[in-house]
Structures are given as C-alpha cells and as structure tokens.
Image 1 (cartoon, rainbow, N blue to C red):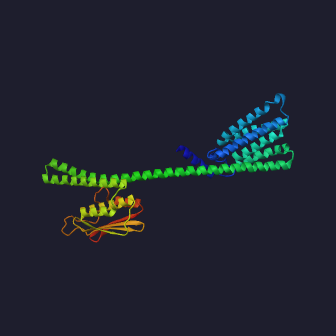
Image 2: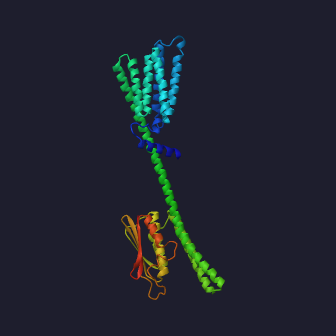
Length: 404
C-alpha cells in the first residue's frame, strides 16, 4: 500500500515537474517492467562493448610489458562507476552522477593518451548515451558537448565523422530516454489506478458501514426507546400502587413493541443480505396490519437495496404515525414504478369525527419516534431523492421519490 502511494506521488511529481530540465521519473530510471528479451540484448551489447574496449587497447600496441594489466583494471573501474551511476541517478544526486561519468571519461582519455583511440571513443560514446538517458536533458547535452572534442580528436575522418558520431549518440540516448519515460508513465498510471480503486473500495466500505449503522439505529433505537418509556411508566405505576389493568396494558404494549422491533430487525437483516421480499408484497403485508389500501402502478422491477429500504422505512413510519395520530382514518398507499425512479405516496383521511385524539397537522414531525420526518427526509436525500410531507385537507400526506 505504501509502495503504491509512493509510486503515485512520484508519478504526480513527475507530471507536475515534467519540464525538459527535470529528471526522468523514478520508474523510468529503474528496470521495472523491462522485457526479458530487452535485458538479454542489453547484456549482449555490454559484453560486445567490453570486448571491443579491451581488444582495442591490446591491438593498439599501447599496453605491453608491465602495462598489460592496466586495461582490465581500468575497465573494471569503469564498470564499478557505471553500476554506482545507476544508483546515484536513481536518487537524483547530480554531483555524484557527474563525478562517476567523469571517471569513465577520464579512463577513455587515458586510453586515448596511451594510443588506443578506438577504446577511448567507445568509452566516450557510452558516457554520452548514459548521460542523455538518465540525467536531466541540459546536463546530458552539456556532457555530450564536452566530449565532442574527444570525438573529433579520436576520429580519423575528422569533423565529419565526429559529427556523425555525435548525432548518433544524441539520437540513441534520447530514444532510450523516451522509451524509459513511456514505460515509467505506464507504471505511474497503473499505480494511480490502483490507488483510485483502493480509495473507491474504502469509500464503499465506509458507505456500507454508515448504511448498517442507519439500519440498526432506525430499528433498535425506535423500538427499544419506546419500550423503555412504557416499562418505566409501568414501574412508576407499580411503585405508586396503580390498578393491575393499567399496568398490564403498559406491559402488553411494550411486548407488542418488542415483537414489532424483532420483525423490523429481521427485515433489516434481510435487506443487508439482499434477500428481501418485493417492495409491493411488503407494503401489502404492512397495509393489512394498518387496514390500508395499496395501489401499485408501473412496470414492476427489482429495486436497489437502498431505494427498497427507503420505501419500506418511510411506509412503516408513515403508517405508524397514522395509527398514532389518526386512529380509524382511511389510509391509501400508492407505489409507482417510474422511469429512473420510484415514488411512494401515503395519505390518510384524517381522524374520524368521533375520535378523541385531535391532530394539529404536525404530528408526523413530532411523533417522538426514533426515525421521524427528519430521518425519512435524510434517507431520501442521501439517495438523491426527495421527501415531502404535510397536511392535505383533513388528513396528512407523505410523498417520497428516490432514483431506482
């Protein structure tokens, strides 16, 4: 995870500072993702250049007698410098990188001074390509410019040959640089995509936790708080010596609430598992308990879990409030499957004239439930929908719309 974040940060840094004077990205400076065939080819090229350098030293006749061990020792020094150069450029250390290239260039200068111009030219070409490939472009170009004099001196054809060599070096080094940067950019995109997927998974997990928390709160807080109120009243009545019938009535109500809470919990668990009964079947079952009429219109289809739960919760809360504030009222439930959304409307005719419990039109919002009008509206808005509730004639109406 941390490695992925580091790659993404490096990638974004390279993107922000991707001017011609910037270092190649870290991914471009590593051999990450280089095909095995390319690696084998590089090894063959290095081996061929090594043979060319050592052969050029000995065929020139400059190293004989006591000087025979000098070429292998000098070449070994160049190999060590090249290996270290890989690490210093990976860390973007300018002075150390230029110093190691200078060691290889000085070995070439020594070969030229001893009378081995071919070996010197090969070493200087290697230095130039390495500088163009791995250093910031201004430094790479400056390195090649410094070595142009050596190409002119070592090339028997003079300026023309040195010019051809210089152009070839520039093209080869820059081509390798572009290839490495393209490969590095691919790995940066992969790292950023992986980070995006991880962030999306974390966001989905947090959203799911929030959904589960809302379901637990809606079910348990609603039923348990009501039960506690009834049981506390029953306790107080027992302590004050109230009539047995009054106490039994409160206990019976608490028992009914516990049974309803258990049923709601089962429905919520079914929703979380994704094996809920169809919404219209749930509404008809709910309507039988509240003696309501159910109308379903539109082409029936499976709803997303969140939309289905919103419809169920709003219907349950609205019917509960009808029973609480308008007992005996005629209630109608309308569920409509529409294009891109589902709508639910629950309306009642208001309390019958004989009902003793009046209603001021604000009962839904102040019913004292753990869910209430605010909870219904928040649930709808979280899904990108809306909820409207208010008096309608002598009764009350709740209208829910959610995308589905």
